[in-house]
Image (cartoon, one colour):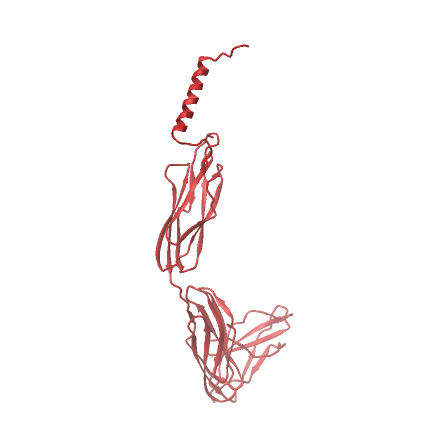
Length: 334
């Protein structure tokens, strides 16, 4: 049987391999793979990364509510980026959307989310630490946010409404803007009025987010002469809001207001006429149907009162133009 010849170089390689194996076993190390991302053949290229933003500020956040921000990790090197771990520290902060260990090819990126949910009021700070093969020190993102106690409240554009003198069986209206001035949702369950001659439209069963508004319209339609009063009430999960209402019913005088205007140059089927009593408030439509004429007589006026009028042109399908310019008329007292 022929003999196997082992060269001197082969003997040296075998001795080195055996020495390395004995060293590993002596140190108590395993030859099986571990949980961290390891090199896959020692590929070349530079390893670099950027994390944006480098700081995440959450500002004021209502206690027991959560807000999130997105963090982006980019491999800006020419070699593979290995992300070994991602840790977050700080009360109220949490991390999601990043499973480690993982790899990023050169030129690629990935996103994850950081959330802030304060359970008590006060300022908090935190840090996200990301350990990779791009350097010995982990990349970090500074976190900050402030927990603020829940505030549920409404504010209104008017603290009281005065309709002045209004002709009996006529109507005047005023708008009231209701705004959520707190930091939590407000659900308006009802908007109502008390008092003879007053009614309201809009606003009920509405949920307002912070800084969101709703407009309601209050009408005064007196059925008799004399001073009348009432109250507008806004009911919600915020403190109840009340607005005092007032107006005077007046009998008509011996005057009327005649209006004329130049016909619209656009195709129209007629016009609507609107009136407002006083300097503020909403315009109310005077005619119940489209008026084909370019003139109108308002017989329901009070002596000494000042009225403002506008006209709109109406096209087919009752599509209205914008208001014309205002004109004002003060009715004589005698």
